[in-house]
Length: 346
Image 1 (spheres, rainbow, N blue to C red):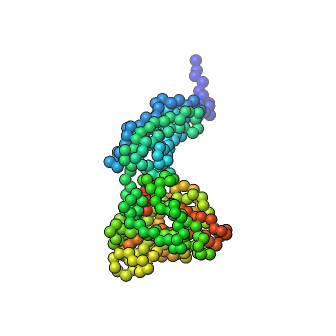
Image 2: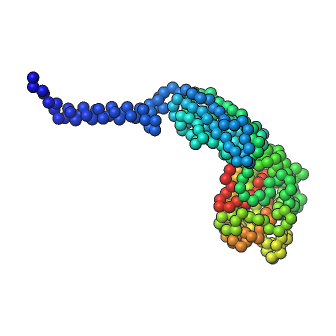
Image 3: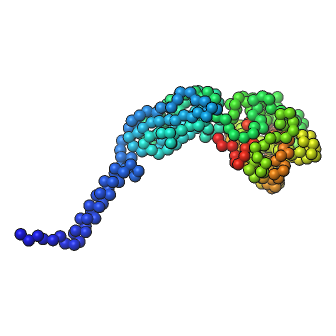
């Protein structure tokens, strides 16, 4: 019997079909590709959420690894919430399991406040699947230690003097723990009402000096590398303006002298710098390099970073836009810190 050869076009077509089938099989079974089960398969939890420890001392360098396993790759979210502080850390990923590579917590936060010594709850959920939220609890024995030189954390021991302009600070202005501080237990509440002198926009200020006087021991003397950080709290009050200033030794005395030294404000992209209107609610992190302080961002020199003798915090009322009688204004400030090389990493 004589064999009948395949037509050349048919042979090529069968070869192409075989290649496509083989590629499709690899596509389905390749764990690195978009498998069909990942797209269309039912979701199943294979191993529940667990934490590598029930208590953690971040100050000693410990961390926590969260684990869980699913039957397919999914978008997942772990949210860690401080029971006392209300701090929030969010870890997100796309995978079929949580491991030390993608779900390790070193004590930082995604949303202020910072964590404290407190119980926390970790919650795992899969937003795109009909899954229950999984929870584990653990205790923070000591919070993370952040790098930098602290100017004031308002926990006691800070060298603070109060200047009140026309004595317009409210009786409730000062260190408080209500609402919860951005760091630790206390923050400074700047609160008052400009109602003594018409259109006098200054309400009050505090001056913070190094313990024992002298100059601040900043972590770097390169102005472009030195950052001043602070956490600002807004309560939604309109007409509130925050000003933060560094004071540089102006006469070579080596210590703070009111009226004798050079006052350089932050927010230096305008003629009259300030941190802006505090019309938001909650805590936010502000940071600026010393090379941008001052009017129009003129900046400190490297030498002036060695001569910072004080930091001042000022409350201003936007008097030009205030109704009459004017409304009270307020904001909070916490954890004023110098860092080197960039803003404070939360």
